[in-house]
Length: 118
Ligand SMILES: C[C@H](O)[C@H](O)[C@H]1CNC2=NC(N)=NC(=O)C2=N1
Image (cartoon, rainbow, N blue to C red; front, side, top):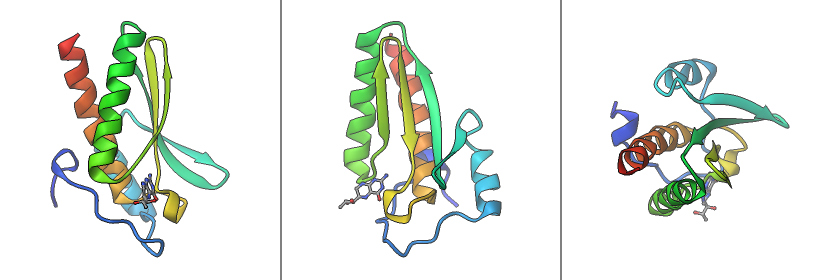
């Protein structure tokens, strides 16, 4: 299986299966800093990224947005002075798909790059 950071999203269909409990347990271990949130029965992956100021937070937001557009899979983004909250889930299936874990891992890669450029 391709490492999450090297993987790409598959086109997600409304009848795609959510990750099983076992898959969730295996996948969350690969992105240990992310929290699994349950919002109205919808499982989501969430992480807060810290930055020196708003400009860096905004630049990271733009980078995540570009990744989302490239992969056709989009997060919720809350951009504030010095921090960005990123939330991934698959709207079509109202839950978590492997795509969400791929995008969380690739979001971490972008954050590393953002901090190095700081
Ligand atoms: C038509 C478009 O490709 C779909 O609506 C995509 C867009 N981006 C998406 N992003 C996420 N997170 N979940 C989806 O179900 C989804 N569907």
